[in-house]
Length: 365
Image 1 (cartoon, helix red, strand yellow):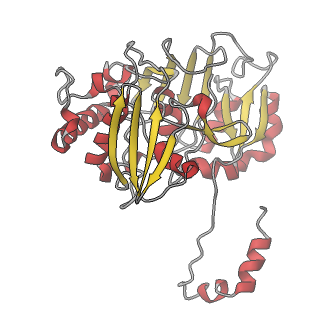
Image 2: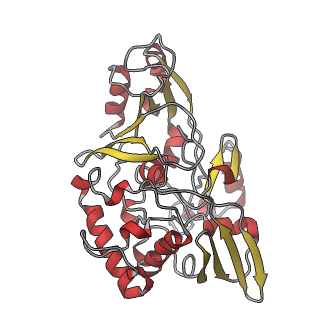
Image 3: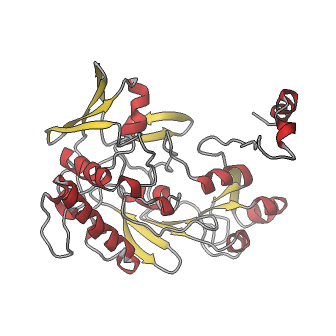
């Protein structure tokens, strides 16, 4: 099974996942001595991941709107099926993980008031056998440019507003030019937001229409976006629509329950990237409350990887007795406090430097 998705840099934020890092512990099935609900490693077996309450996979199109910016939709669904251009994080490390990325290191040059990144794609293929090309990257970029205000990561003046040109140099090479000077290391914050999507299968405006170059004009790109979001809203067809079966990630969707967002993924046999582990099926399930998830851990329900709610931390022995290992859940990112200096009651207090210094001393760094 590929490494667990890492948080993306820059403006990327998964507030619920981040909060979990501060309030919960991970539990994972271990050993063969536990109950059948907590199995040991099984070749070709199934792993079931428990999401937190409020996390539900309910947006499949990998151009996510702000209302659906969740870890369930991005880290536990989209990234399993459609890889971003650059992958971030590895066990014990931060930064770009080139081994897991769809492209090698970018060549970055600065001329005058512009910075250009030239990218060479690795020889990945879509699950229908077609190669992943520069055109697939530009397809996503064109849709983003046309509908940027509907994208969860958009801030005016930032990406894609700061990108002045996208040039296809060959099927496997392209360049992206930005306004301003960017250091190569920080430019990956922008390049990592690109997600190749299958232009040959998705660049259409009707379900049975032929794919064409609709995205090459802003009006056409908006029509394609409208079509794909309409298909996205048809959740009953997530696991059966031919559109969503064209993937370049290690997993493809095999089953989906619209009412709950529960999903089952199977291996993509055409996955071109590095893959390890022996899992055949990955299940991602949602819960309505911490209590429901905790009860599932203890009820032999087959959860392989879940979490121990903070309120149940004193019952860790019950979880380990059920055959699970319990480990801390570090946050994938940073957290912070927002002090309201304008509050009439507490504002004058936090405006005092010594008070803020005392508060800082109380925070475990």
